[in-house]
Amino acid sequence: MACRSDASKFCAEHIGKPPQMNACLRENKTKLSDACRKVVESHGG
Image (cartoon, rainbow, N blue to C red):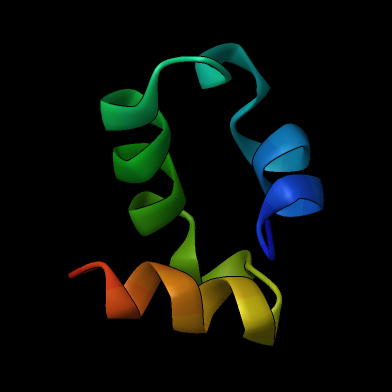
């Protein structure tokens, strides 16, 4: 849940679609909050 605000800000069109959401978060990793970036990286981002 560390990525909730980042997800809605950068990847709102992918909410409810985990594979696309994960890809979108990886693409936007440089813009994410520190907490979210750590989650993305821990999941192979």
